[in-house]
Length: 462
Ligand code: G6P
Image (tube, rainbow, N blue to C red):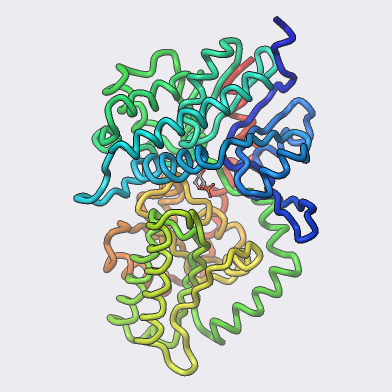
């Protein structure tokens, strides 16, 4: 029997892995490393030869890397057929589960659970099974496996059946829907998702609120949690990394360029997001427009710096949203702009150094999601800010639980309320702004990514 066990003692499973590959013109493969909380969290055990990260091949380059047997030690990419992956990732994970947990559906058109949905659901099962089988193959006896997010809700249950010896955790990086919204899913699917997750020994959430919503769903649909334990781990910003990275030369260069775009003596309201429906970028622009309209004293004196990086562009609804953000920014600029002043500076090309430059010089950070698991931008800005930055924060972001006291809190649907909050933020006295920023930074870094990950492992025991 022992020969059926693998060698890895700590395993992480997620759709997106820490590395991706591009095919170069000469046919060679080049590797790109990604960022994010999970990547820095794993650096805590990173060089450990017993650790393995199982993820999907997401691009042609990734698939080619799998075929050629190219790869990094400690990472195993699964070459799931592209059509199965597209159904599972675009169809179920991003168009159904993401929409449920962020409560993004718009009646009367959505949701519709039809034959197409059932076909995609079958792919989601296949995709989850591919992960469960790979993990079962790679894990040493009694190993700890931490499965990530809504893409892989069925994995804990499938893996438990294959390998009862393992310690299995699952962590949700999203909100969790309240039962009355979650129950929009067909009954058997809702139950399958919950039972899949309840195959884990322990489920982790970013805030108490999301954990309670899960508990409420389980109470209604599966009759409770069974033996599964629940934990809350509020992923924090990586202060050491951010402070160092934000003082590198490329960030300084971007600051110079950005200052020129903003113009001498003007205030900057900064937002940095994936172009994502839940981020509420359009209402943010409307709030800014309302500010300019109703408080003309701000005209020529403020610039809204909005970085909206493309995301999930395979989905029409995301492409439409991206177009709407662009359209509204143009409209505000043509209505209010003057020869020397561009009211909205919108950039859509992903550039981490430029994001850090914007964090450093922001007077106000606007983080107004409709719903968000945590929102790390709200946590990163105070850490990096040069002279203090007022934070306008949605009460529907997970970060609100930790940062609410020192932020200016908004209802994300209330555009006028958000405009008022922007005004309040712009007029906050510099001393108070600096004090609040200091407290926000302390709260934001309370649980650094490495500790966040180690805590989860420790809680799995063994
Ligand atoms: C955000 C969410 C995560 C999710 C990720 C997926 O970061 O907070 O919960 O896993 O997006 O993004 P992707 O680009 O891989 O679809």
